[in-house]
Length: 123
Image (cartoon, rainbow, N blue to C red; front, side):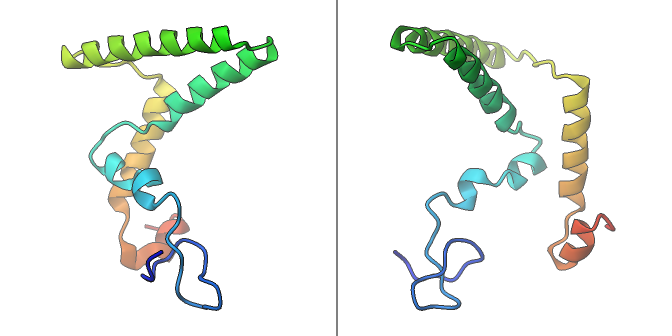
């Protein structure tokens, strides 16, 4: 593992300042740049799909049912890709639109030198 210093990851053994790079770095979980570019956040779709599997698990989920779920999801993704390619806009719920707008405004107001004020909502 590298010995670069960063603000995330576990401390290296016998060190108070050097950290081990995390298994999943910020480039995988940080949505800051995606929000700035007005790109969708993916977590809602993932959570929805996870909820569907959880509900099916309660109903005695079998391997065949999992395969059917994957096929259904693949068909949905293929259809969504085609609609995007054709320029179709996806509708979002009003609550999600308002949440996305609030997050977009927060991200655009962020200044790293004023982090304490930002976190306290005094930006």
